[in-house]
Length: 408
Length: 138
Image 1 (cartoon, rainbow over the protein chains, first blue to last red):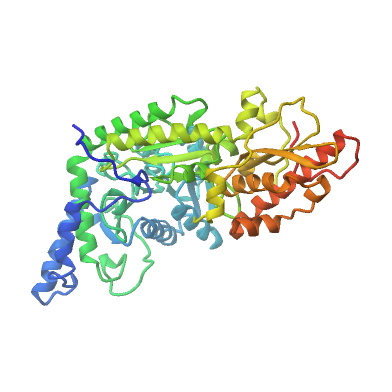
Image 2: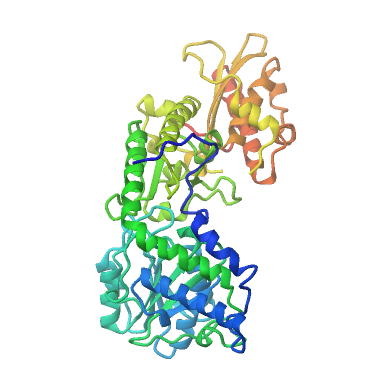
């Protein structure tokens, strides 16, 4: 049952950007800021032992969500650092085996820019295009493999369109060829079941703040059997078995542990509730004409809905719904005027990319909020279409592709 | 991003939205921009026999600043002769709306829309002029 709540504005529908810290998580973190402040690396007194115990419990909780061994979890500052450590660390350590890396064009910038950096160092890289539904074609993937391919990095859940890649199949192919496989799972925890005993994944990146934990903490899974070795990117006191030096932020780690514990316990039920809300939003909004879903609807997390409202520009729509926090694939604010690279990689036309909005539903989203958003969107889209010369032309039966536009 | 009061006002209460009936006399229509760039403006002017713009209408697909820029120019061109309208510069539009640097292109587009509408008017009414660079044509 949905609790009856009074609608409060603004409404947050940007859970793929970040989530609030669950109050249960916040309450377990606080003592580690004030009373239990010890350095977990202090071996000589009770303050350190207490902190170390909390860090190790959190490590078990994180490992448990993804069915890994706690010894395979390395704390980092977040998924960006995990991606950097995995990709640069593995590429550098294993460069004697080959210097070719494969990834996808729709990866997060933390992967793409890291691979670009390796290209500047002399590695070569292949950026695979997804199919129009956002998924990787396995035959195209196999065809891209080379004898000198040393590393593959593919995300589990896409941040913009929420599609789920076939990590199991990609992992089998990589293991068969002896190629290391890294997966960015920042958007996946608590949304899709992850079993690292089954998946042939060598490294996996996690973030706490996408799963109701605090910002500034993440983890990298580094497989022990068969053992994966990394060149450290952060040097110092040799924390985290030398893979990532730096004093561990106990309160953040405790928060991530509790957040992942809650995710493991509640995700099955929570995802059903969120799917119901997402479908309600989808049905409400697609009752309008010329509303297109971006990305596959089957292989997709329940939280994400990415829609293009044709003939309405995304930024003006965001302005019109200023009481609702969402993201746009339009990049009208950037100097380049380039719309979302993810939607473009799907082969979406520029105007559909400019017209896109990402709704991401979370643990605290209510039915009332969804209904409010549907009504608001219908009203504002009608208004903006009245203002749109493209809508006029569409209604007059003009094919916009036959118009000769002057790019500016 | 933060918008100026004037942009918000034009965005929320756009002036002179719409289009004229196709058979009205003295019309000039300019359409500039491209959907791929995220903005398209269509500006229409209605010119009387003394060469004065007596009415103007617009429709714009684009961000709030693009909508505000085109709404503003419909107000500014009214009462001007077509040649006076051509004197409106994008810098004046940007200044009036306090557009940030990333939105200057919206004011340029609005200036281009005026030029395109005037050029269309003149070509239909027997005057030769240079056509605007960004004009979209059907």
